Length: 226
Image (cartoon, rainbow, N blue to C red; front, top):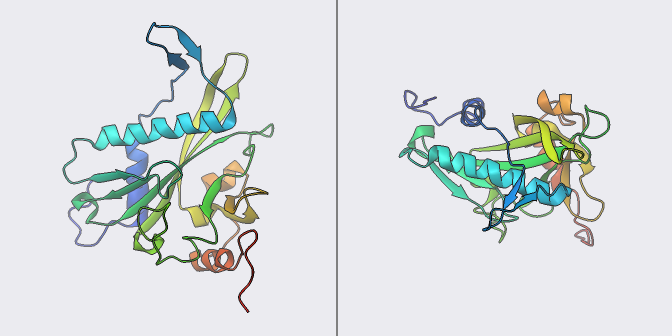
């Protein structure tokens, strides 16, 4: 997909379509790890570890696909940075795009994630969008678009593998809820119904409504200004 015929920066719809195209051939087929002696260690199904493995595979896939694209630049944010990947280049008419990658297991109800997907950290870069924070590549407001790539999957504990793997490309505010994703950390949570995530039917009507709501939420232990 090329946007070079246009003099305008790539739209969010075009960027989402491009991301989908880049991942159209992605297959998560990691079943374990091999030692230097060839011994196979089974895949670790602990949620945090498995999520990191999936996210790492997705990051590596895009970097590999774009490695020889001279008109596409991909910068990796690093562990616990926002975004996971920064996209720009002449291919997108120099639009600066934040691509964050999420992984979530389906719950007992196959239409719900087992836990809320974390979208953003509130009280920091989402609230102060013109400020550069240590855990961000650049200020939040510098990005033309913000996009999430979400991996939704099941775990077969008997076979010790991941299956029913589905990738969704969404705008974070469109799948956001009014609820934090953690009882102990300052993270914006997504809606939990997978069909709502797939259709981008979150709890906010507009992007500005989303930003205004979460900008007004204090971080834990933060005192309101008098």
